[in-house]
Length: 232
Image (cartoon, rainbow, N blue to C red):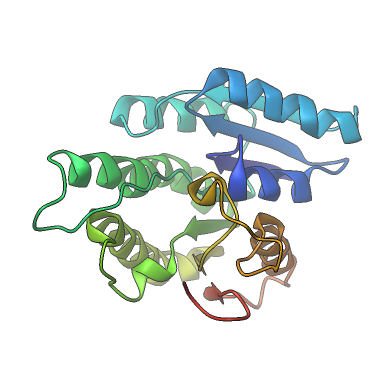
């Protein structure tokens, strides 16, 4: 399979890549920081030198970069799985957050997925198969103080996902929205998780792999994961 993962150098994206890093799969990873991306590729190959991983460093919040990345991916063939995972979190409230927060998070969290998907869907449609996973958030489902533009951008991604599901279901393309709660990634750097208060990235990755393995007659439309003790 050809598996495209944005934000693949760390956190949830890297965990997904690690789960799919098996012989027979080709991983196409994108991230903004080239050094961290190359380090991620090296870590993946430490466990299996025979896996195929290609990387593409770019700021996917820019339309041209997102579209160029998608075209680059198509050069390897029709993707079987597209994971739109690129994202940033900047805290604040919509009425008083720093200027530029909304634009930054909409461009990264929503528009990157929008432009990449629009480039890749025609090839999937022609092939009559494919699976798109959009990494939304519980912030897509419920606003909360301090969520601000982050929540707005994730609501947008959720709406995009729901529309894709309706538009593509008769073309053999599956669409899944993933709504993680708190996950122990760089956003929670410094947090004491010794009591497993929040989830680990591999929890999300394992659910995505499981959902991708269903027969063509079934699709998991939504995956909601929260810490066992509830949201923070």
